[in-house]
Image 1: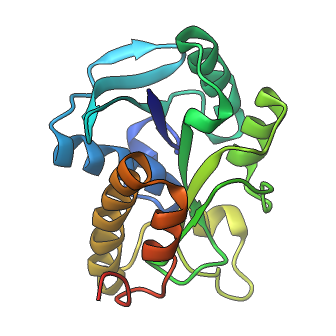
Image 2 (image 1 turned 90 degrees about the vertical axis):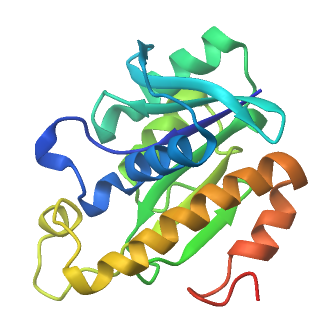
Length: 193
């Protein structure tokens, strides 16, 4: 069993913001694999289904970004999962808009949601897919930037990125994380050629 956790903030005011790209990715995966997010458990909105024959749990923690680890810890404990069963999807301001970076493990890289998950799990050895939301413009406040919405011209890039996140999760589950890294860690538009 694998658990795919999309990071974001609950409540309507945060919908479709850069920081909620993880929530958007989980929604896209649900659409692609016909999984319904219809359960509230372990401080998360969850759905159960199958990807590539493997049972999966999809989760959107409802704890707000900075406490994401509380929900992840509860889910991992309840389902008796290991850190190798976890895939976290989150935003990354150090990647170009729409670019993906699949990793087997790594540091929080300044991301408060990842930082809290690492703190709660006591390890940084879990898979993650970072989705580029672009660097904040000079003189902008970081919080204002990540809690802002994508401009119209970036929306096609984000839609494509969400499609690729869904495929990358399927690839991790069926072919392994190394294959997914080779296939999806390319500049936007360069993958799957």
